[in-house]
Image (cartoon, rainbow, N blue to C red; front, side, top):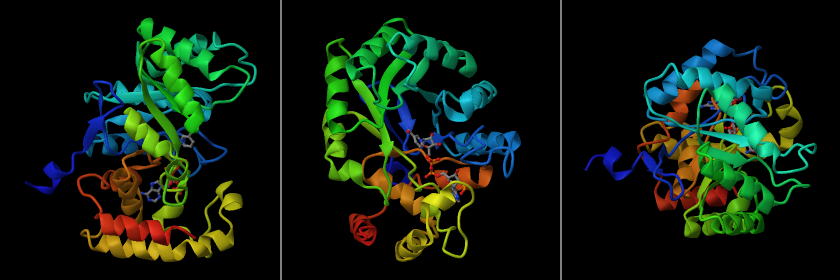
Amino acid sequence: MNEKTSFPDQVQLGRTHMSISVVGLGTWAWGDRLMWGYGKGFGDDDIRQAFEASVAAGINFLDTAEIYGRGRSESLVGRLIHLCNTPLVVATKCFPYPYRVSARWLSKALNKSLKRLHMEQVHLYQMHWPFPPVSIESWMNAMADAVEAGLVRAVGVSNYNLEQTQRAVAALARRGLALASNQVSYSLLYRQPEQSGLLDYCREQGVTLIAYSPLAQGLLTGKYSPQSRPPGLRRLRFRRNMLERVQPLIALMREIGEGHGGKTPAQVALNWVICKGAIPIPGAKNAHQAEQNAGAMGWRLSSEEVAALDKAASF
Ligand SMILES: NC(=O)c1ccc[n+]([C@@H]2O[C@H](COP(=O)([O-])OP(=O)(O)OC[C@H]3O[C@@H](n4cnc5c(N)ncnc54)[C@H](OP(=O)(O)O)[C@@H]3O)[C@@H](O)[C@H]2O)c1
């Protein structure tokens, strides 16, 4: 058995019939100027190359949202998927803006997303946050209506804690549907889904846990340090002492990666998420990042390595 066969590169999305790659492609940065500097260090050509490199490397799962770049990310995804012959699984999200005071807004938002994506049915439609005033049950009912109308293949949520996920599961079950996924922040540096029991619950229920910011927004790639701080808003988040404290973990990731034929810290960080049973969706701004991130597939860390990383990340 070769390495590829022993470590499948695709898994089932929730209990649906759709298969997704164990590493997805996050597209928040595509069109986003404020946080990610779209149009300055990278542009549409880099994005096209990131997309093409991802698909060529076996990634078939893309995550976007109506809010990313105020629709620009969805438009870019829509353009790119139609220039490509490979069947892909596309996930987008509905944002519960405060002015959306009733779940009736979901179908309006969905129709606009479908237009930007040039799709008649989105594969996975996710409620972006569990914000009030609309209840989880009302949003899930609107999601179920969208499934029945044939506009959505599977339903997901995002940023839902354990109790909120249980409510979404129950609400959909009343409509004869299963929750396919919950997309939450999860990385070596943010372990809340493990600690809260959410990861275990999702595993038991057959709900795919999709891990966003799996590289801790670039921190786990090892390219940022107290001497080389990230640009833009991330500079406020990743203070000098935080960048210092993470260096021993990065050193261990480098050492472990070396033992797997020269895997990078980013690839080790993503593989750690896969080993935990979640699907990382790293953002990529160019072909180089996309290729590197796809290199987290086709191999696995040992359980001893996962345990050593767990320990080194507990600071
Ligand atoms: N549901 C939600 O509320 C939510 C929230 C956040 C994100 N998400 C989703 O999750 C996706 C990923 O999360 P994220 O973008 O926040 O963080 P991330 O994937 O942890 O980090 C992405 C950033 O890291 C850098 N990077 C990526 N791959 C790299 C590589 N191989 N080598 C060096 N640098 C690399 C790039 O930025 P630089 O080159 O500028 O460093 C890239 O934009 C998003 O695109 C989005 O789809 C969802």
